[in-house]
Image (cartoon, rainbow, N blue to C red; front, side):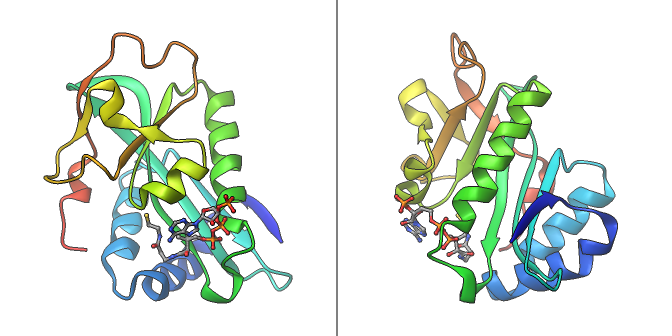
Length: 168
Ligand SMILES: CC(C)(COP(=O)(O)OP(=O)(O)OC[C@H]1O[C@@H](n2cnc3c(N)ncnc32)[C@H](O)[C@@H]1OP(=O)(O)O)[C@@H](O)C(=O)NCCC(=O)NCCS
């Protein structure tokens, strides 16, 4: 298994994986739109021995109270069914957090299964007075600081790019 930054020839494999993992085209189309608009801060693939994409995670910019604070949102995250339960999502996320930290990003937010993101080192964003734009997401919106002072004095609304305002 190899984890690396996505390159242009990975696009069809990423698209197919996301369609399968999410049973629809929402996440696949989201990634296409983000990529086309230069909004993929980082995209990582996990590939098998044949070079097929079996895992993917993307990060894109988010604004906090309308400000660019070098924060990013993690989404989407997917692992091919046959490869689940082996720590691959964890490897992808950790690799992503490491790289973003090296690049100087301050914090990462995620919206999804809170138990899983807690296991990956995220904490409930509400704890810091941070909320997402979508209703009823208090329990499922989490944050992972990269810089030690990233959360100091920062609270309020965290906004993903408008590409995220679509039917999933
Ligand atoms: C969610 C998904 C990416 C997990 O991939 P995976 O490679 O099986 O996950 P990992 O094996 O790396 O698991 C990492 C940790 O999260 C936990 N975890 C994984 N899936 C979980 C879930 N659905 N709910 C709660 N915890 C979960 C694991 O137990 C593990 O914890 P541990 O390190 O303490 O043992 C995969 O199931 C998937 O692609 N699902 C469909 C798409 C999806 O729902 N994406 C997430 C959107 S929020």
